[in-house]
Length: 342
Image 1 (tube, rainbow, N blue to C red):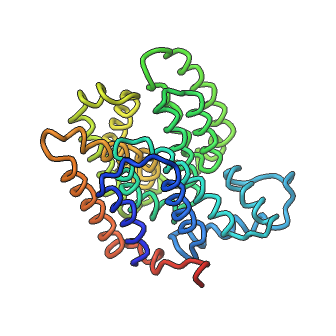
Image 2 (cartoon, rainbow, N blue to C red):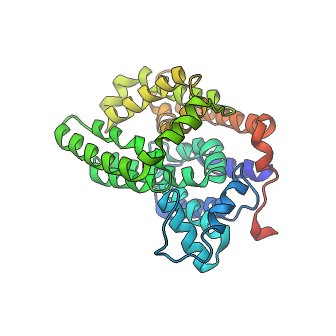
Image 3 (cartoon, helix red, strand yellow):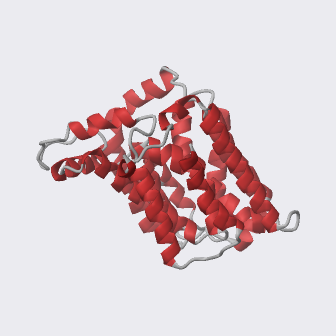
């Protein structure tokens, strides 16, 4: 399991050095490293065997043939089947989009390398390496959030729409764009209604009964959902604790406040529909990256920033240790294998 500790240790050590490096070369190198780790993995991830049929069913199909499932992911598999890049081409593209979005987003944070390190134990290792469709959707969401942090509403919505082509549940992130800032409410509400309605009709409406039955009525259960929801809630509590400072210093504060409300709401809903809430809470995990990258500054009067960084890294190191050693499905990630070394 040492490769996973290596992936966590690299950004963690840079975070400990208090580096504020934002020039592109080190970030590009970090992004390429994680893209290779994600894209060229071999038999790694709980859904590895479940994703193979997505690729196999696209072999020999023309680009004009009907598409089944999430259109973005289906077309990606069709392209890779045409190029004969196999599942590794699919995973490499998904890894590139996820890592690219995460890198662009983290690079502009207060403690950028700390934010990246926070993302590794769950978002990188579990999501990007285990659930390719959600991973690429989350990468596109991070990409959109980087524009939202600059006050740009339309690029955010377009990236969320693109993310919905890879996993339809990403559509839930579109309404949050309304809370960008206080001006222009009517424009944003109208845009959200139009785009969300179109995506709902195109991607979700035919599957809504199946999704409701599978996730709610049959009460599917996700191992570790309560822990993951609790991690989001912890970040939300810190945001609320330092809300007065947050809204004075950081732009786009209202958006993150509503993200925090959503994370807290999931705590009360997770027992009702564990898997459904777990899947939706995945899109709230950027809250952890943002809050804990800013916490050393927000709590500086109570604890020295460097000490806070150490505590945060120890906390997420503990999360990684517990997952690798005690999680029920961690066996699907162990040992880590990569086709470059086979």
